[in-house]
Image (cartoon, rainbow, N blue to C red; front, side, top):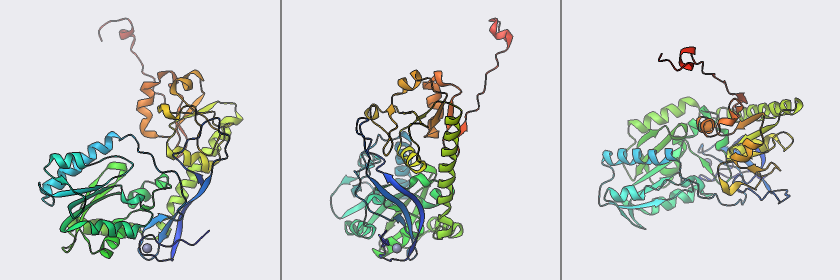
Length: 380
Ligand SMILES: [Zn+2]
């Protein structure tokens, strides 16, 4: 494989910190009738030794990420963030605003327009980039372009899922084709400096386990919030390849645990299905080499995926109704946040849910004990 060149500082010195082998494009679900094989591409995270930017090592051409349904959490966070930004006084009504969008949804423009800002194309007083910049293969050019469109006294609002969060929470699944950069505030500060910008302040949010919004502009100084973030990152070793490489261990232990569990189920004749044809399930199944002898199908609520198969495998995507009809012995849930929702939506599957990560965990069935008095209809 080629030696990566840093997408920001152009250095060639660095380390591969997470290697998921070759992976299919995680958002392209081929029709079930398409026999494959699907094209696969290396998926590796590389940490630049010069500037500390964690990034995709390879830049394969994969289908563009489709615009997803906007999750409610993203909408709520945007409201919260805009409120905090307006309260800071860094952004005032009447200012011209330009937004770099993201396929994850979450446009701030409608709310900012409501606050009296006006959309512009160039020389913006306010530039909003909410999970947008990570989609740019050339990170140096992306920062330079944003700085170039920023008015002399303008403010750049840059929001990103923090690399510290990814490491601390073992979110190895954050590594995805099309997501070219995984930002620490330390690396972002260096990138901004190269374009003549300084982070003035920062706000933190719980979104995705830890999200940072930086406000940056020309001149000025970092405030105590930014200093605190930088100090914390320094303490947690976010630029140290040995620390970032813990993601590899987390990934491997999840992958091995899943494969082992599914092999044991197959050995005892249990019929296992999955739920949640999300991109994280695609990476997990592909890395673990799971086929349809171990996992008979993956159900998903999105009708557009029915009749298709999981990328890189022959495992079909089915509807929740088909899943219930199949009477599975166990259902691996690939999106743990959905547990309450699927339990309520599919009561026929009670007691069969197994949360896939970090290691397959069968749900604790809590049987509600109804006191005899209530059974007889008496008031307790
Ligand atoms: Zn670099």
